[in-house]
Length: 442
Image (cartoon, rainbow, N blue to C red; front, side):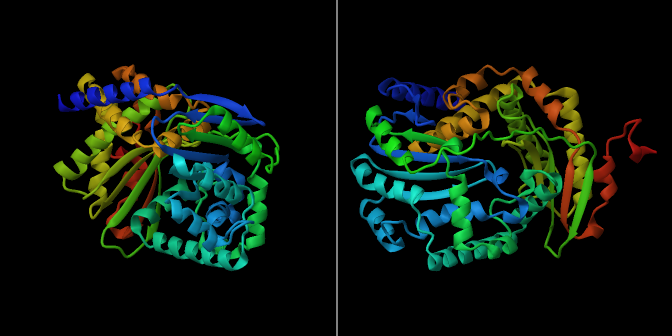
């Protein structure tokens, strides 16, 4: 009842806010789609998206896009060195920075509306006329290497990276956008600048504005910014299906206090009918997985299960445990039970409510709204999905949720870091459920 009241309150708040705002719209400016969501507040959020992510570079160049996006603001611009650029932003408490992921890079700005005309020229300079100063670039590169080493020393991050390298071997998604120590060390300021210039094209761009700004002002400012950006060759983000055809188990011996395990299986592509249903299914599964693994059996402090919905979507199962053989038995039985019995109507109803509560909370800031619009435009080819998702989820039926779970949760690519003597690999490869056709029973 409490969850329902929260959703009713948030729905009413969102509806009231939407009534006070003008509707979102899109326009084409010199070949670039510009999506505008009026905000109803005094904050301006602008995100310029460059599509491609790991599809933009070969495996030996991983990390170059991440370095480039950091260098835009950390190495100065044509009109300001790094300190001058930062000082101007600090005077108005504005944010300008870039980052990248598996599917696209984002260069964003956030400021108070009254400071927009001060911050916008800085944003445009950093995006279109970055300096890539060699001394500052060396600092940025060393910071990136240090951060990567620190990340690699963390077992949770290390197992996730290892899992992706194994499951997605030969695919773009095996690449880590943050790079490797070796790849980062090889990049020069000149080479990174040349790479950035190669992806800075109108054909890869989407611009999202969440602010109460006049349409003509947005159009004029974007048009002037794009004057310094080349059109580029047509670009389409490739979306690929991913499926494991047999269970696999890959081990890296490590001296750790516990053993880390991650499994990756398939998931629906963005833009397909199963996507929303599978999101809800995996959220219900997370709760059941946590209950069985931690609460009922005490096998792990923080077991995880989630849906990673990118251009190559997948479902993940993550656990750290001193009893890996006991874990796989619990997981196999849980998946088998759900595939046979399904999630019941109350479970689906409750999770839809929880999902929507989370969705509304996450849409409270201009930045969150812009990020949601950007992700839906790039991955689903439909930015309006960020506005209709609540209604779409409400319409889901238990049958749709169960069908999605059964369709995509199948064979699993498993990786393991820890003591090899503590695990029976055959249990992960052949499974633990007794079936006539299961090799473990012969």
